[in-house]
Image (tube, rainbow, N blue to C red; front, side):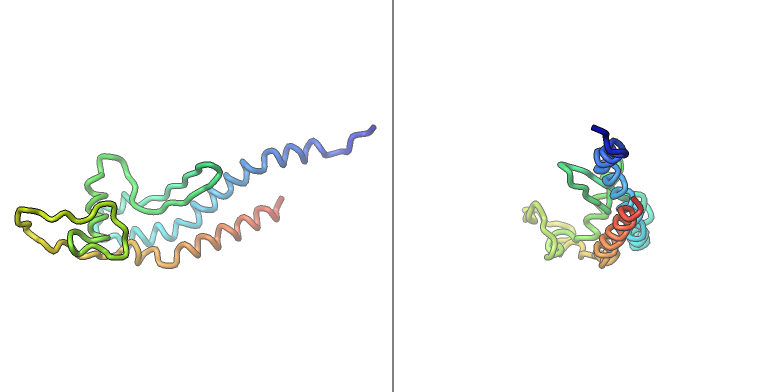
Length: 149
């Protein structure tokens, strides 16, 4: 029996396809989220927080996730906390739409400011509508990539 020509090449292409598709998806996610990152950095109220704004792409159990937000090395943890407090508020003025892990603890001592800092919501304002834009760009890019194969 004569082997059909190109079967080996097609078999190799299908074996390599998931890895290539994952690589292309990550590339498209990163490029599509750059405008969101730029908006977030411009909305950040303090210059030292701009270096915390970053893009992370994680893959676990076959699912690729895009994370855009405040990330950084451990030496800037306090700057990260200040940005978090500034965005979501503190004490009794916490953002009611955000889920916090720990409730506000009532202090037996008098606090200097019992009300706390109001939420500024700069991150939410910068990211309004960005998820849909990124999803559209990634889907369009993947359709073009598959069309080129």
